[in-house]
Length: 112
Image (tube, rainbow, N blue to C red; front, side):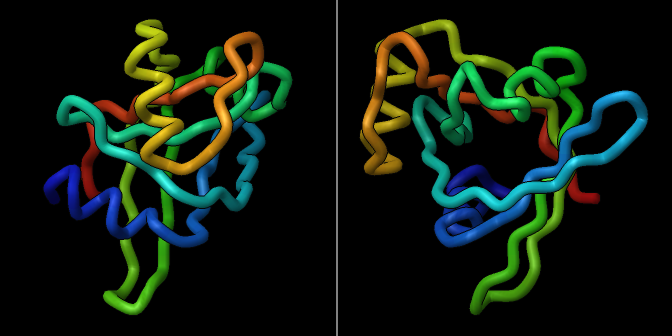
């Protein structure tokens, strides 16, 4: 699956699963962006989801849209390059707060 196909699948509401203390946690998200050939989504430093990603970067994603279902596993990492993070938020049409916004990069994407 190409990154552009993944971004298209994640254009509406989609679900991200993380884990903490062997307990899965699933929450709805919206929008993703491709920057420099990588897939990104946005969150905030003060969210529990971000803490869970820092502790265990392994995530699973599920999206359902008019083209069907898209499900994959990946590893999620904070984007350290602020210019790339800002560009990801711009492409997602979301406000970027330098102190609290985090662009999360999906790596090692593989179908579940």
